[in-house]
Image 1 (cartoon, rainbow, N blue to C red):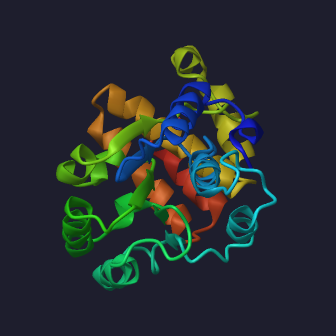
Image 2 (cartoon, rainbow, N blue to C red):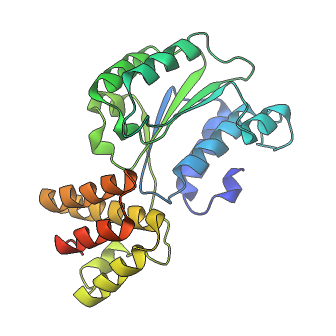
Length: 246
């Protein structure tokens, strides 16, 4: 996958392409934005671009092939262990990266749902970010940037991804004009697809956060977390509807 395969996000892709071309790779990046915006796909395209033997994410060289097959020792992905990213995971990450890349120009650490780090894990990661191993870059993915330590955010190059419209997305400028019946119908439709429901709830969180409605943000966030725990999608969306969020 290259940048050309990712819909939208032209500003971010152009910036990352320029960064890779000139070799000015930061030690930390924060990719913030809703689900479905292409954060992980963009991160992987960037990693391929930087470590490709041809310098173009050719898809044919040994590096590109290993990355495609998730076999590269220099691309490490961290995901929550259960509901949280735990301090043991961060300590193991430090051990695995202490000597820098094994066979590639650069080692990349992709941290999915970075906002799920426990307080202890976040503090341990901050130390790792402050003194990164040689030729190592951390890419944090999150939709809930406010849940991250401010000191972590400040040490990363922050890239905010736009929402990529889908059939169930509601553009923010149309939200206030959307009637109650239409909202209910959309919630009912979202109950059939967990990924679309999560993206919709993330949109709600962003919408109400911009209006400083903390109660609504917390209620929508509760629904999002319940979906992560594999609670029935329809029950989650009905709960969101009951609380008057949509």
